[in-house]
Image (tube, rainbow, N blue to C red; front, side, top):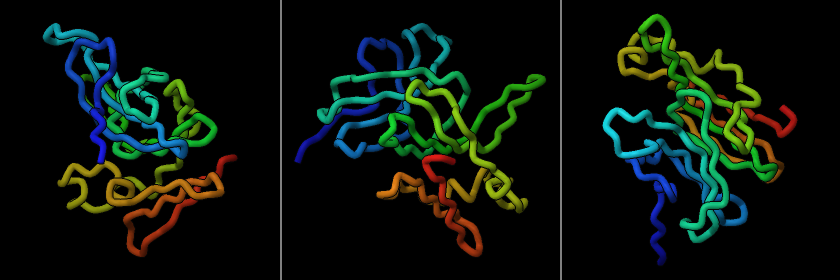
Amino acid sequence: MTSIPIGTLPQVKGAEYLFTFAVGGDGSLYEILRSQHDDTEGSPAKLYYAHFAKDGTTLITKAMFDIDYVPYALIPLPTGEFFAAGVLMKHEDKKLQREPLAGIFSANAKLKRALPNEELIPTSQAERDQGLVDPAMQGGVARLGGDGSIYILLDTKPAKLRVVTPKG
């Protein structure tokens, strides 16, 4: 058995928080984490997508997201891109608006294609009261198929399977 420390970026001095991780087909590790640039109180935290070698400590690449995002699902793709699902935080008129965002991101953490979210919006008051922004995805499961497609089991009644092919 091996223990691999995860959730840290080399050469970053500030506090870090790991949102999610995944293992690539070659055994390398991928993480989405939030990190401050330094230890200064109030220093803005940034969201990073990081790719580590199989040992989990050798950083291969890191990229900073250009959106305020709270991810909970990550699937690295053989193309170097990745699928992520989470909550997009929008700051409008001094109010925080949250909306679901699932999509394909480039290796440099830029959103390339968002999935339609008509099935992801909370439909019941109970879901909204629980703070669920996208209950179908938050309670669902996403997996990469051998054909390169992403299969997403949505937590809906009846259950639905969404298939995202490599071409869209």
